[in-house]
Image (cartoon, rainbow, N blue to C red):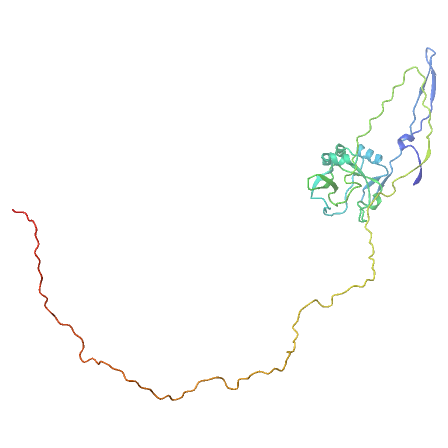
Length: 310
């Protein structure tokens, strides 16, 4: 919490003075005229870094410079390749003005995608890992970006835009998309003074009030902290040698028993046996068998048969 005394902005701090003049006309009619005296508007709070890039104290001052054509658009001074994060399937180059097609993503951040045609005025922040997304002098300032600035458009697997970074240096913005420059406010129409009436411009002093409010000093960021390891003493079994199998010689067991031992194996021997005789009758062949030719006389019989008489 910070206590701040707020005053009207520079255009509204103009002093109004009362100047009443009277003159006598030929008809003797007196009238009053008023003249408005306004002090010149104060110059916008602007800082310039060592590279010539500029930043403004408020978004309104940055928007006014862009709309007036006096803004010096940011020019990156480093070169880095585009690096995708988790959930980002592809990256392609686009111009800042082409973000007008990312209407849903811009609406999610409260922006109008059509305003990207005029450029952007985004708050300079530090990078999550600690390096500057822009030069240190512009951190906390609103930096103007050209509608023709080259960007890296990161998309998810469905082809939907996720975030953009600066094309040359891959530096990020305060959000997934930069803050676009809105259209200039429509000036209020002041009624013309009616002739022959006494008009007066009254000096209205500035009103101040003390209020307690939260102002952005440092934008929310993420940082990575080193958490030291914690240790404790535990008792555990440590494997010295793995389980294995081995062959161990086991001595034989002996006992005394009585058994028949072959002194000489069984065998055969030849002994002389005297011959024996018997008497048998035999007919020895005195002449070999042969064949002879014998004449057998023919035999006849009488038969009766009928023959044709010619």
